[in-house]
Image (cartoon, rainbow, N blue to C red; front, side):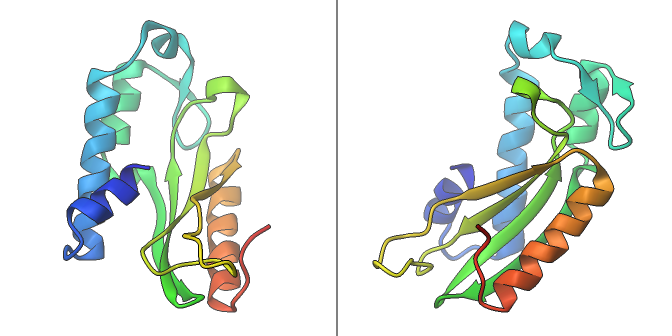
Length: 146
């Protein structure tokens, strides 16, 4: 959702500027809107080792650390951002990494509708890096993930 809002707010901005603005929003939310329930959830570094909430917030704001991959592909006449990130917690039993496909304007399905955001999660850095590459290769070959 944040990406689409940034894309609408800054339609002429470069992909790198839009990613930076999205990361800034995520960092601000992580630092200022942490509920007590979320604060109690155990946080982990990229190797799966437990860390404190403060360590997690610092690592989350480090783009080099939190980003596994940021690439884009052109498919069905539109661009899609493929972003894989370390999220560092298992909220609701989830995994530590997530890949999201963020379709931009003009990326429509067979019915002419804007493609929705799609996501996949992974338990380890190796699985996340492999999943990112596989999804990106599939998109570039003209295949959407199932």
